[in-house]
Length: 178
Image (cartoon, rainbow, N blue to C red; front, side):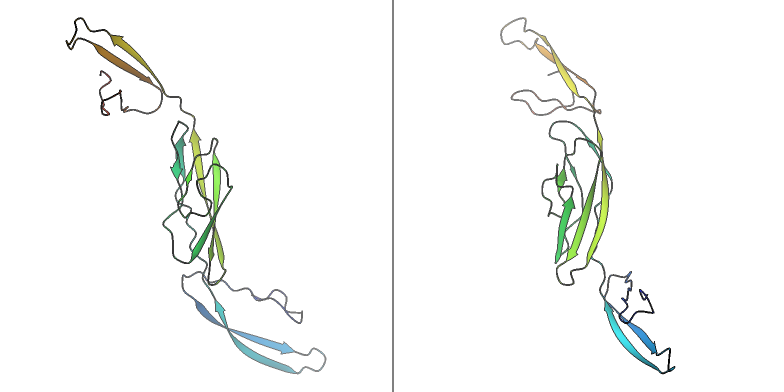
């Protein structure tokens, strides 16, 4: 619409809710309030679409060593990406950065079309769960050299089951006795 129909140079605001360029006709009428004379003109106004901004679905991040969450969506050609805040994020200009906030955080994605300079925004919430995971080991020594009587039992507490266990020189396994 028109910002103010009583000023000599009003601003025109048009919305394009599609993903294609819209050419919209806009008729302007001018009337001299003293003489009553009027004139009109029709314009074809180009309205560019907003770039797609998809920050992704909300994420849950378990606050443990090595854990992070990926946000965003696949990159679209000719679009610049900027994320804020710029803390606990792998790359503020990536379409799908990894984040590792220490508390619940909202990340705001700004996309900008390099051709039209149109911008759009989206937000994703990353919820941090402070889960403490701990592991202890109980050993049973070998009875004799080269027999298989020795064992190590790993006890895991906290976190989410199922657990996976590793020991030096062995592959990951689901059994807690190694």
